[in-house]
Image 1: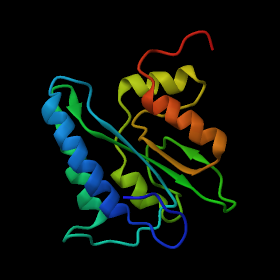
Image 2: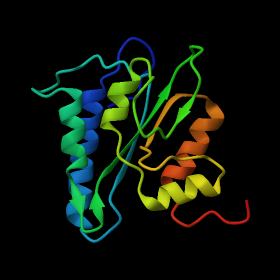
Image 3: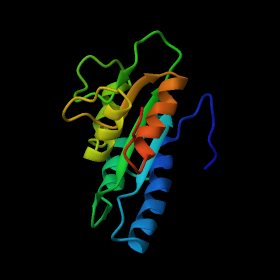
Image 4: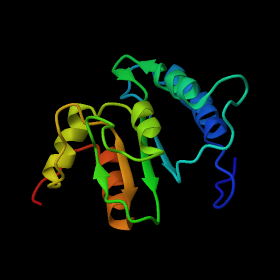
Length: 157
């Protein structure tokens, strides 16, 4: 798949392709931290259903792949040029405009290590927060990627 900007958002296909790679990786590394898939999107799905399954089903399939340390993580960051405020790591979809509720529903709950990384970066994460950011700007995108991929605890910040 090639990343594209514009009229098409083949998100189901992207999640399916990522899921195939995650499955192979988890089989080869069964005792590792679970794989992390970060979906950076405009949120508007143009290929659902894809190959007989809708977006929610593709996300469920991906997050059902496990290592001995837990299920694969699906983190979503929605980029938009509209005037809606940023919402970081919500614990509920309440009040989110479209496509927020669907992206929230398919986002994994943040593991304790990521919550600790976020809080150490002075990003508030409520209990039950999910790996989802709505209407992210560039600085938030960078922070999201850091929180979602940092292995060690953040110190001296």
